[in-house]
Length: 198
Image (tube, rainbow, N blue to C red; front, side):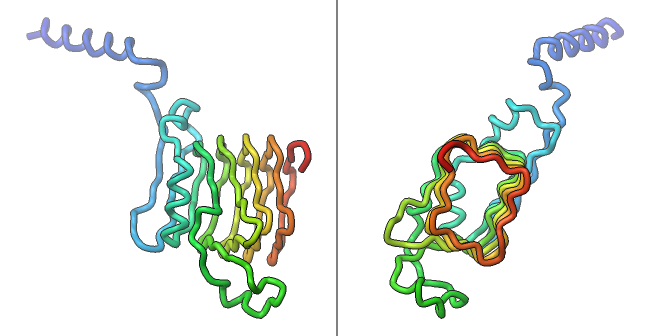
């Protein structure tokens, strides 16, 4: 009996030694939101997650686009986002009531992000673009990109932000454009770095 216990203990020890470093003692915590109408797409990875664990749990840009199409916001923290996010693929909608009196915004195609856009302490590997030259992108919820690194182009030109936009500590490694952007509740960009030609 003692020999069997020793054999199992030895096998368990050998299995742990054969695992890649960090697998046996990983403390990577993932917080998600329950799915449902109006519930933001939520993914929070804890500070104990390694780069490999973040890559393994990466969020695809198409998931963000789908959340916006469903009328949801996004709440992402500590994640990696893969792929390009093309916001001109959002359906054409109506100008929100709070902008109906703005005569200079009449007559444009309007695409809406109805919820918040929170991407904090994350890495965005692909481009984020709103490419319509005939329309407006209206973001109805608050935007926070605090501490996030954008590795490709960010073009949010012709966007109207109805709530505060916070870019503090964000890094835009490539070009970032906010041409003809309107920040109705302010833009905060303390310790933000911008790439060339911004």
